[in-house]
Amino acid sequence: MPMKTVPFEDLIQSLRSETVPFSVVWEMTNRCNLKCVHCYRGKGEHELGMAAVTAMLDDLASCGCLKLTLTGGEPTLRPDFTDIYAYCNKKGFAVTLFTNGTRFSQEVREALQDKPPYAVECSLHGATAEAHDSVTGVAGSFDATIRNIAWLLDNRFHVAIKSVMLAFNHHELKALRDLTRQWGTVFQPTFRVFPILDPDRPETGLRVPDHVLAAQRSASPREDTDAGDEPDPNRGEFMCN
Image (cartoon, rainbow, N blue to C red; front, side, top):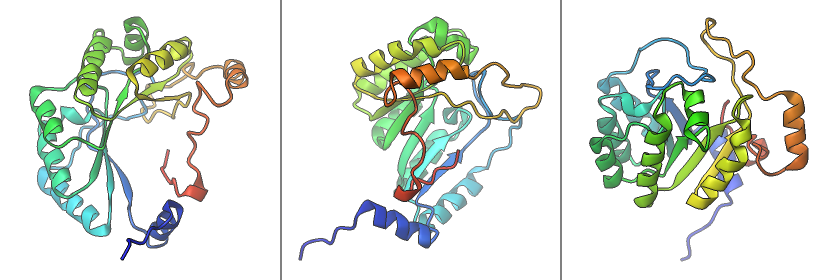
């Protein structure tokens, strides 16, 4: 008997009606080795211990979670990252890793090679070291990220490049698109800047000016912007920003 197929939209609606946590994003840590000017994270170092982590992952699996995104901060800064990653795979999640791509130790590389993630989404905020490092606030971060993106591509991981376009780096957009086309990777630029949780670090002046953004959208209404990046509630894309 042939297997019954169900349209994706119907599946998502069914999951929503039954409140199944189909796709979960977990901020594993606040710690990060970069100092990105637009980062919305607040202060604080609290992290779940391994016992609480495994209990949470057990609960998610039993509730029907399929897609699990590991983010931070920088997830690979956790000394138990590879243990957590192995447990996520043991539970059968389709794991996506959000990373700044600067800290792929040999242990992390071996873990990813042993059980390749569903995808690795890596932040790159400029096609040059000058532009990228001016966003991250850390000299050398561009070179480290480029090296690890090259390693990911050489090992045939599914890679997406994410870039936040700010008032002082949006001129890099075309060069970034050309670079990611050369790599054959997905490119996800955005002009969004979220409110920063730390009141001592306002985001004043970071956003691309309205008139520049309007001109950009007029010139390329479906390209070089985050057009289409908004969740479509009719398709069940219920990611929370």
